[in-house]
Image (cartoon, rainbow, N blue to C red):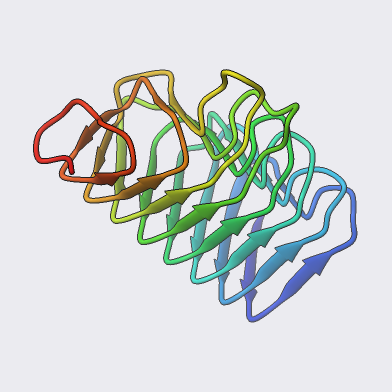
Length: 178
């Protein structure tokens, strides 16, 4: 089935939005304060999140997608999610553009901000800042060499990603990084 959320709020539940096959189009909405994931997408699902907020959810991540057909997150804020993999965990094709992913994770999270694995990915113009993980865990982890470009990476160790033309508070290998 399909779920369309426009200017809506989902809060205080177990999983905010649990999608198993089907599609989610979320615009101008908030998914906050859920006991498990804010948005959880299973195999064969399609997720589009545009100017929305995913905040203060627990479980594995604020947004968790495993084997989804496609995940698109644009112009959104993903913050204060304290799951085992923090803010965003995606295994499968995705586009992430113009987002703020900040202050996710906890001292028990394996990764604070993002856990990404894909052979078809776009990650550009995002700010990834001050995500927390258990020492010495990263704030951003790429299980496959995902191209991260034109982004701001601050207060986060980055692991396994190919970073170019980005700003960081630590030295990063790659072309055009500052």
